[in-house]
Length: 372
Ligand SMILES: [Zn+2]
Ligand SMILES: [Zn+2]
Image 1 (cartoon, rainbow, N blue to C red):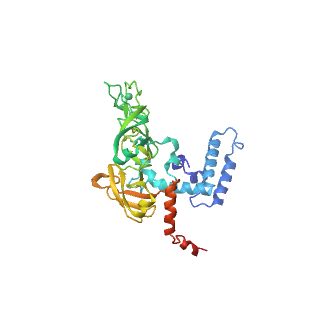
Image 2: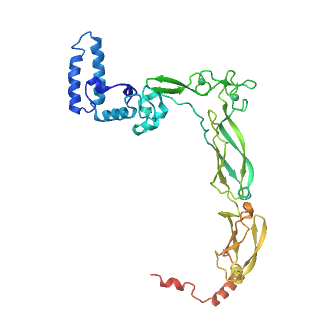
Image 3: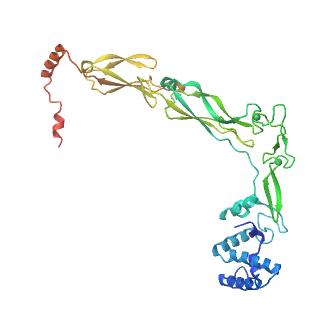
């Protein structure tokens, strides 16, 4: 499809009606091609031109698919100055290409038809998002911390503040497009807009460009950005800092900074959501007889009562001693009791345990005997 279609009448060129069958079109083409063929009309430039037009018309109407596209296009734009187009009257009222675009989007939009000849005003464009990585100590992640990250990338020029003009001078409105960034060109029925070449679509002219950014208003540099980490941030989470990414273009807003948070592990504590976890070893005697143990928390030790007959692996919950979140909310401390078995025994210990064993003649593996 190309822009010429709008203004050309291929049916008229071939001398057929819009209802002509494929055979009618083929027949008309052959006849006209023969009559106007350059070989049959040596030196006749009119015939040569007609022959070209006939070939062009047949290339479209002789192809069922292209003919349908052409018909659709003609139907949409009408033949009398877009009558029926949102009230555009006959007599050549101009239609903006942008307005037509939506109507024609059904078959690929005008981008296909008008190719490179068309342009839109360069509107505000949001800046790209930037990324940074942050490694946090376990306790900082738990309690929250204010720290900083280094971000290398495009940033607003610090010399001109992103204006692009040397400090002390200022940009002025482009006289060609009057600041709109685009210029209108009239072609046939259509009014095209294309980016203004004088200001390259920005709408502004910088006479004395900033010496650091050469007028672009942006430089590639390393910025140090303060990041406030909320209490309880999880490993692998991302913190979004609005407006801390790359600067936008043509007055568009800056992008965001996405900080990927990595939390180091702790020698003693683990995490399960907002709960802290800790494993505490006890001896067989302590687990069997019951005891009181000191359990560390992030904020001093607490005493935990281990009742008699506590099996290894049992977890106790100490309320409110996990991660302290905002608004007085907090997680719990999950204490897992692990019975440790001595690897080496003294002679006395061995003797006592052997004696103990004679009391424990219950078959502790009885339940396994029912297994197949
Ligand atoms: Zn600058
Ligand atoms: Zn301009």
